[in-house]
Image (cartoon, rainbow, N blue to C red; front, side, top):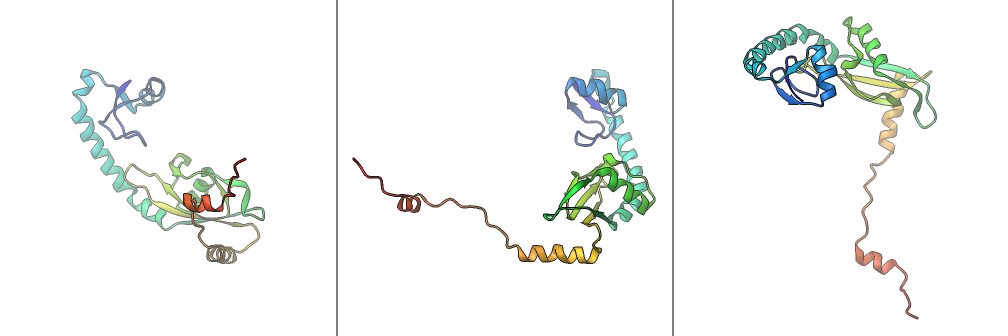
Length: 189
C-alpha cells in the first residue's frame, strides 16, 4: 500500500514523503491516527502544501522544545538496584522508570515511547536518547548502582573493573601450516 505521510512518523519518514507500507500498518494505524492518507492522484497534488505546513510545524516545535532539550542534556539519572555478584540486576530499569525519574527532575512530561533504550539489566553507566521531535534528540546519562552502596563507591568500582580487565582480542584462527604441524601425523596402514 502506498501512503502519503501527513505528519512526521518516527523511523518511517517526514511529512510529504510517499512510502510503501504493509496494508495492515497503513489501514489500521497510519490512516486512522491521521499520520497518512492513501497516495491517490488528488493527494499527490497536495505534496508541496503538506511539506510547507510540516516545515512550519517542525520549526515551531523545535523552538518550543529547545529549552527542554538543553535541560535534558545536563541530566544524569541514578538508580539503586538489587543485583547479584556478577552485576546482573534482579529486575530491570525500564523506559517507564526512566521517564518517571526524568519528569520529576525537569518538570516536563516525557512519554515512555520517546525514550530510546532497551531495558537495563545490569549495573553500570548507560546512555539513552530522548526523542522530543525528529530533529531534537538529546542524550541522558543513566547510572545503575548496587542498592546500599553510595554512588561514589559504585563509580570507583566500575572504573577499577574497566582498568583491571584487559581488552580481549578476538580469537584468530591459526594459519593452516601451524594447525597441520600441531595435528598428529596420520599413519597409513
